[in-house]
Picture 1 (cartoon, one colour):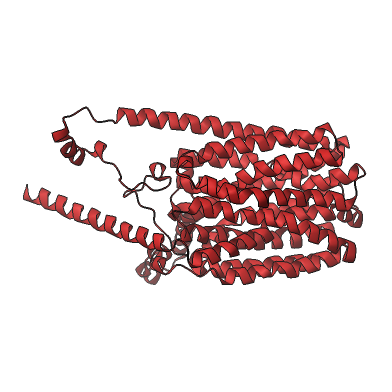
Picture 2 (tube, rainbow, N blue to C red):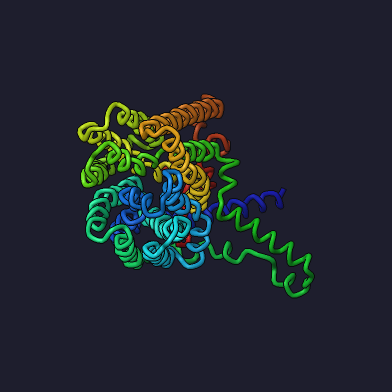
Length: 509
């Protein structure tokens, strides 16, 4: 009996120590609200403007690329498709870099890669070379800049995280608003080759914005045990055979995949699994209208400047709408409801694509981009917030990396498939019909799935309810019964994360 009590006492001591450590980390994270975090927020907005807003700008040069390389719609659409796909598929490599060298260096490296890739694109002599320079190199640079910027912002803001994420998403709107104007002006003055060279210089500014993303001091000591994982030194000294080395390499690969790719979340977290599947299906048609909007308008005898202005209107709508949404979604009422607002906006976004099928005049397309922009604002404002609600912040980089890899598959094949559809039918309207069907169906899938998961959790919670007890013994029963324990300081998304202490950890960035 004494030994059992002693074991229990030591276990309780460890639990109290862990809870105290988590509380100190939570206090440290809370102290980061504001201050330098606002500078990081501005830098993140600018990084997202130069990365996520850039692929839509390629549509301005779509016809020129077709004429220059004598390419079909399908062949030309591979350029923005590969760029966007690599932007997402590079997530695991980006996660490794963030752990080894931090967010600041990774963002700056991404700025160098994207700038060099676009500058090299101006010297290409074939469409295949453009796939490598503008697609792979530039897209990988976008990935290395975009994902660390979003990750470090999530560490700087805890209480105001929905507001910070929504405000950072205005960067995409800023890019959609300004880059088409800039691209159209450069196209008029210098042609597509000169424009790509200048845009490469513009993308180098990601290095400047990445330089201000300094790491959080309180999180400096976290993550060191993970970085030291690997075969023990004694094995490396004693075993030198080829079979042993292969085993070690394989073990290291498996450990790295488990760490930087959230397969455990995909298998054990049903909310993350549903969200990942829904977003992957959504991306098959979500960005396609941005690629084909300008070619669709110019194919119906609209001026190039007017067609580029449609993208700018889309960006202006996002800039105007996203800040109020950022304040609105930070209200307490929206906690636990982010996913439903997100799915509703996604449904409206999908249905709005059918407007293009009613006509191709400038007023109709303006109406389309306004409705599309409103729904896109909500989707962009809540996407990372929903993901942070679903997984712990310590698992967010790997969860985002796995989601990005899954997205990259549909992002890669989406524009080329619709390009084949245009080549075979000669009509761009079928593109918007297909996108409407795909995006709307993904929204319905998310709504129904999360509703069923919430219903199942409520039923399970009712079954775990303690029996009615007198007030004098209720507190004692709550202390003695594991089913009656609760967290008095809930964290965002804590009910779904399975955190042992209910606190949100910060990782080394």
